[in-house]
Length: 294
Ligand SMILES: [Zn+2]
Image (cartoon, rainbow, N blue to C red; front, side):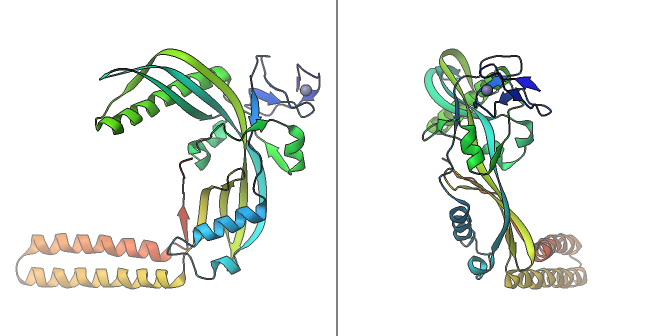
């Protein structure tokens, strides 16, 4: 338990959390009473129905998706989670191999360790369209929030290295070189805490369950599992069998002609294709992680 420095309310502290959000007044504060700064949130601009529709239309663009997917996929349950990001606007002088460069970058740092290695890690947030955080809004929408386990100070140093990577990538692609960048002098560095709404959904198709994740603010699909149509799996199975058959034939012919090196390398190559086809055939759901640049 901790006490809110603004309203005095008792705030529950979950393991690992270093920033807490008061459920009564919405104030975000660090456990050592440090100031968090501006606390914003993304609004839920798309309801569940809209998000599921957008997802289904998106899924149909993938060739392996069954044709009856739109009618037969049904939503089973969902959770709306507001995830924390430290979002920065950094302006400064970056030194690179070709000289110094003044740049402005926007950086988002996922601020809970549970977000590492998930599609949430790479989501790029923009400050546009964000509103002041309201706990009542989260509750009204039936959502829950995750608080940062990364302190503002820890986030600052990560943000600087992200900014350096972004500037290096930007310059490298512009100049066609492979450059690195170092932030030499910070002119401005503004940090904000943003809670971004994300739907975690479970849906059913033909008696099996699949998951997807969408950003509730802009309806982007962050993660998706999609079933594969039967005819694609049969085609892959047939392809696998013919590859193995071709491999064996090549081996027999090659050995008969005393071209053993050729025979074995061909067999290996065709067997590899065969295994890949079998893998595709027995993979009952395709896992697609799709990211859109915002
Ligand atoms: Zn409070």
